[in-house]
Length: 373
Image (cartoon, rainbow, N blue to C red; front, side, top):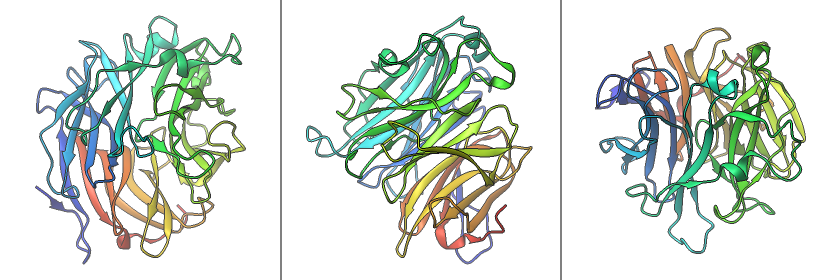
C-alpha cells in the first residue's frame, strides 16, 4: 500500500518494504537499490534475526518491483553465512559484457565471524564476495570470494596489509561509462588499518574495481583523511569519479568528498563539503538524468548531531553548491540509497523511525530552492 506523505499537487508516495519484527527478522537495516536497463527495481536490505546489532545472524534480502516501485515481490534471501553475518549489499548492473548482452547484475557483500569491536582487535575475519544474476534478480549464482584481490596488491606496505574490519559501500556500486574507463565496475569500500586508534582514526575509505567483468580486481589507494569510513560513489557528467564518505570520528559533522579523473586509480583531491552536514551516518549520491538537465543528488540526515531529517539535495555544478532540496521525513532516519525511477521521479530507500525500511517515490519537481543547509 502506498501512503501519501505530502499535500503538494505532486505527491511523494511512500511504502514500507521491510518492517522490523516481521517475516522472521527482528530488524532490517542497510538499504541498497538499483534499477536495471529493463526498468526493474531491486531493493536489498540486511535482515537481522536476533537484534538490530551489526553482528549476529544476518542475511541479505531482496524485493523486486517491475512497475516503478508501486508493487513489490515478497522478500527472499539472496546471500547468507550460516548463523553468522552476511551484509553490506552493494549491487550494480554490468551492461558492457559481450557474454551477457541482456546485462548481468552483480551483488558484492561481506561476511564476518565476530563483531566490529573484536575485528578491530584482530580477532576475526572479514571476507568479500559477489554473486550474479542473469535474469533481473530472480535467480543468483553461487558466491565468488575475492578477498585476496581486494585487500591489497603488490605495492601495498606490510603495515597496510594489516586490514581487519572491511565493508563494501553501503549502498549501490557503479559502472563507469566514459572512456577510457568505460565498463569498469567500481565498488566503494572501507577498512581498518592496524591496531585501533582513538576516534576510529585507523579507518580508511578506498575502493576496488574490475575491468574484465569480475575476473580480476584491482584496488584504489586509501583516502588520506583519518577515520574516512563508509563511502558511496558516482560518475559525474565529465567522467570524474566522486566518492562521498562518512567521517567516523564525527569531528567535522560534514561529508568527505574525494575526486578521481583516473577512474579511481588515484585521488586528485579530498575535501569536506560544508553544505552536506551530517551526523556520523551513511549517505547516498546519484547522477539524475532529467529532461532539461542532469543533477547530482545527495540523500542523508540533514542534521549535525542526530540521525533525523532525511533530505534529498540536488546540485547542478558537480557538487560545488546544492541549490535544491526536499525534506522527505522530519523524524528519525538513518541510512539511505538513491535510484532514478524515470526522468521525473527519484526513488529513495531509507531507514525510518527504527521501524524498518521505507521506499519513497519523489517527483523531482517537488525539490525546492535551498538555503545551503
